[in-house]
Length: 363
Image 1 (cartoon, rainbow, N blue to C red):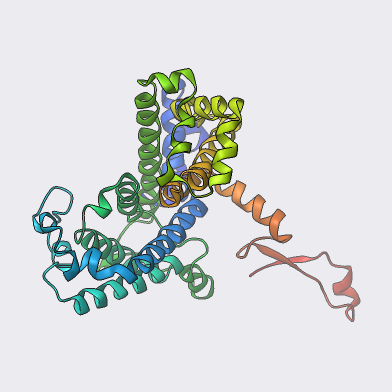
Image 2: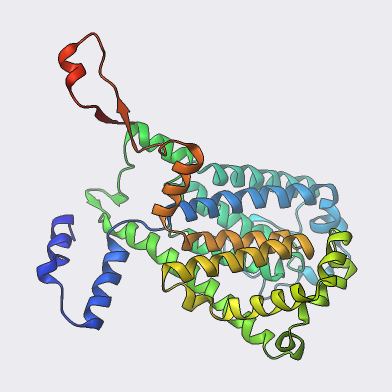
C-alpha cells in the first residue's frame, strides 16, 4: 500500500463510525503511520549491548572454570537440554569441545560484535549476528544463563530483531543524516513496501510491552498467594539475606523503617498487578513507570541484582513516547536534538536580508 493509498484509506471521510471501528482505525494508524518508541528501542540496544560486554568481561578471569576445559566438573552441561538446544548454525557457533584458546577467541569476537551493536553500526547485519552469537554462547553453561533475567534478555533480543533500533543515538543514524535513508530491502527489481518495516518495528514494541505485562502480572499473582505479601511484611525478609546484600548499612536502615517495609511490599504487588491498566492513560502511565522503575532500582541497590533490574528498566523505556523524549532532551541539553531544525541569521551587511525573517535550515 502506497502512502497516498494509506492516507486515502485513513482519511476522516473514510473512517468508520462506532466505538469498535474507531478503536480499530486508531490502532491501524498507530501500527502503520510511523515508527514508535524509537528512543526507547535505542536505549534497549545501547543497554543490552553494553550489558553483554560487561558480563563477558567479568567472566574473563574465570573463563576456563566457567565455560572452558576447567568446567569439566559440570559434565551434565554437555548433555543437550531444552535450554541449550538451538537449531544449526547457532548450535555450531560455540562448542564445549573447542580448546580454551578457540573458545576465548570466539568470546572476544562476541564482545566486539556486542560493542558494534551498542554503537548501532550496520544493524541490518550486526543485529542478527549478535543475537545468533549470544544464543550460541549461552549453550556453554546453561546453569549460568538459565536465570530469569537472562531468559528475559534473550526474549527481548529476539523481539528487537523486528525493530529498527538504530533510528536514534547510533552510527547508522549519523550515516543516514549524511547520505539519506538506506535503500529498501529487496531482490532484483522487487522492493519491500515502505510500510512493512514500520509495521515490524511497531509489532516489536507491542511484543516487548506484552512480555513485560505478563511478567509483572504473573509476578503479582504469585506474590498474592503468600501471606507475607498480603500482610505487607514480605520486603523485610530478603533485606536480611547476606548473599543479597550489597550495602549492609543501607539494608539495615531500610528494614528498620516499618512504614517503608509495608509501603514497598504493597506498592510492588499492586503496582505490578495494575501495571497494564495504568498504561491506558498518560497520567496513570507516568505513575506506573515511576513505580516499576523505582522498584527495580531498589532491587538493584538493596538486593544486589543489577542485571535483572537493568533488563526490566530498559524494557520499560518503550512506554515513554518519542515526543516526551524530545521534550526532555530539549530541556536537558538546552537546545533542540540533532536532526531537528536550527535558526540561521541573515548577515547584517545586507539590509534587505536583515529585514527578512529568520529562516529554518535542516541540519
